[in-house]
Image (cartoon, rainbow, N blue to C red; front, side, top):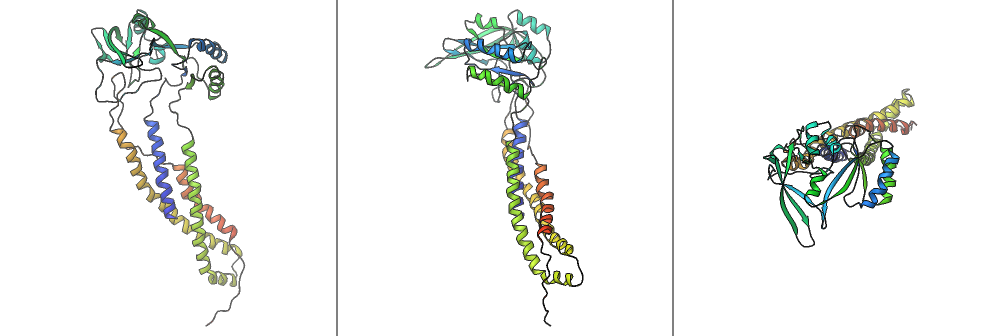
Length: 376
């Protein structure tokens, strides 16, 4: 019983810690609450069919557009030349490294209105969130496009201004759509986004929108940013493990309790002979069972926390060693060991199981008396 409880506790803490670490290290692809209908490979004809569907599900809700530059060989990728970290890890948002759009896209990313930045964007300047990336009022970017054989690269310097943001950002900034065409590329629609300041979709609305949209093309997807993509499967796994551990503990408890009851049969018969009620025998059987389970299960759960902490450390420390920086140059907070303890599951096994054992023992305890003659 102790071994089964310890094994359950170890694995449960490991799974819960991994889930908590996933949530702590999760990087939002879009602003919180925003709903994005997106796809880089969606054709213009498909977008013409998709937009009326979105407007039909969300009548009167304005849609924020985001674009990506493309050429004859495909989509163009960017690489920041100045102010980029050399030995760090960065991640991009769902919009990519540097999306193109209008003032509504800038407001969506900033979460506020910045008149000066919107004016600069309207003048054809890029709005950049990393002040170190701008030199002499310009940002230098390495533009890469892939051909069938090798990449084509060229460096461009584009007028830019800085917009102040709080905390690490996984978007470098916003470029005006005119900057794409000015460099000889084509602006391709990649996103239709619902600003959370205007409307927040429920899961039912998201599903009602996703079905018809994906019926147009499977290259498009619908996503509402809720801060994590974690589902309930880890909890289900923990409860299945708890059930399995309970079966093992129940088998061990009733085996031990049965042996104890057989050993104490003569004492129980003596109790009955001196007038003890049948309920007394039930209480004795319940006491034997709850003592065995109440001692072995909680102790096993406590013992299992130690290797569980080791599992959590093994998963957390390599992540904490990575130096992660936002595209705006602000580093993410480094975290040490992330320990998650699934208290509902542990309490259900540690407290609920001994009580359940006691009730079962009381219900099935033998209350009949076998009269025997004692010798000597």
